[in-house]
Image 1 (tube, rainbow, N blue to C red):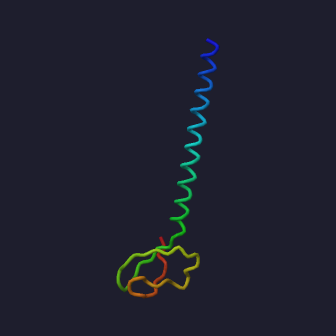
Image 2 (image 1 turned 30 degrees about the horizontal axis):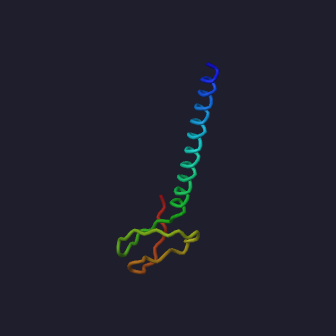
Image 3 (image 1 turned 90 degrees about the horizontal axis):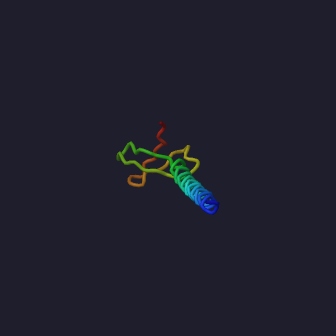
Length: 77
């Protein structure tokens, strides 16, 4: 009975460590992908109607449309 108790403790502990490691891995993965999407600036071209995004930090002067080169400003939500 004593060996069975130790087996249950080790089995439960290893399962807990495994679940915690998976949780930590997927949490970090989701955080990295969310931060990359959060840094994107979305633009709507008023001339051709296209949507495009830019990952630059400073876009206060606007960004040219990749299709028609018209300078557009960031969409605000």
